[in-house]
Length: 259
Image 1 (cartoon, helix red, strand yellow):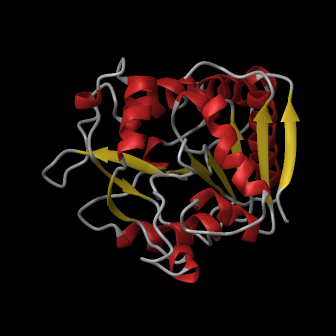
Image 2: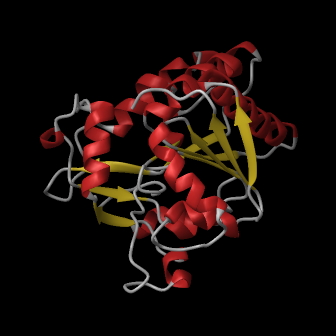
């Protein structure tokens, strides 16, 4: 099993571990004169992390002029368009409010370096990442059904394990559990408010990242985490593919937050 497991005392410690690691990656690349290509996730899990991260980068006066961000996914409206950025569930809005607007202007972050997949040309996202030389670091959460990004579970009868690992950025339909979970986390339990489609970074680009860190802080995530510990890689549990990655860490908060 290649995964490194870290037990954090609570949500704040978990968030601090991830924030410090991201700062370290950016600082190391800056010292080497290299850009940083950072994969980002959204959701309730990441809110404190992003607050801590912005604060650390500002206080340490880290140069962000060469920081490029690549978000995992975004909800879609029914007409193959991204959800409007002003929609309360928009991940572009989430990132602006929880991270990007927290950077002080003198850190030099360029908003043109913010990247999200485009449903009109999903394959361009994989090319963009590949042309950048791949991602340096990918932050992940884990769905209550074991999904990462919006790569939902698929039966092994429908796809071979090797083929699942090669899935590209694409438009996906969301599982009932994902919709119900996200409604509880961000829409006051109203499933009608949660879109049924999204565009997601594929497994291929995620697994080609040089370093992956997955955070977990909900009771409902214990089941998929226990399945990962069993050591079997399966498309029915997308997060199990971290077992195949040579530099992945899962940070689990022992003290859970409410979903």
